[in-house]
Length: 399
Image (cartoon, rainbow, N blue to C red; front, top):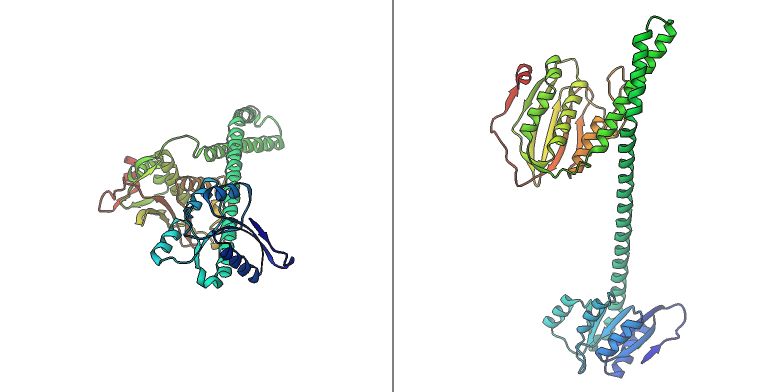
């Protein structure tokens, strides 16, 4: 049975599936909704087959259901809604319902209940159910849109990384040839041409050499996360020792002192971990102050993550540049002041974020820098030695 209203266009349209076996009660509920400002169209049913049929062919804003029917267990309506993947709110409208049963019905999926001797609550309950449904649908749409955007962004980033990898890899060979022949020109014809020609050849050699270094840095940046290596328990102390061996000559040349507190074992790619610390230590040496470089490495466990610190006594960084320095190809100084392509810290950021962490710097101009980053804590965590140990430049060379 279908009943509808012609109250005008000012009222909110409402399509109701009314599960009720008493026609007089159905009339009262419909009248109450109309009185509350709804333009009601109602389909009245009282059996499971009718419920299933109507839900299969019609779209409803709300279901009003009498809890006690002789020919149908009303709570089975929720199973039918789930089968058909429908999110129509159901409100129980019944003559008697104890509190325990009401709570159980709400747990199963009913949004509310109204006693027939207090049907004045019906309009309020319906409006609240409609608003909750609207908000839930908007949230679902927003989540779906966000998921699509994330997927698009991931695909775009993958395409960009693939382009960077291919470009930097494929351009190396022709550039190597250009660099080789310009260097050959410089060696063979230096002094045989005029000074202008010598200067031009020097510019060509310098440009080719810088481009080679740039492509190598870009290739290193694009390779992060592409090697397919599964993170494994890695002792950070061992990674630091490898970094010190790699930088032994530079550390001795600049009289660098490194203090390394006991460090944990974390889940990471050992090669990336070495690259991360090597870039940060190399950065501290490059941007040193007048005093001999002093670097302190430490880690603290905060909740479910390790917070690492690489603190130096270098020239420091202005507050407005603390985010800028982690962007690829961004430099704060000229190449004459400090060599490099502005890729090192971008690589650090990509390594840390690839492993589920974050990186930032705490610094003031002239007062050194403290680069801090996090790694998720792992079951393999251990703090290692209890005492700190100092490594002098001589110790570093011998390690």
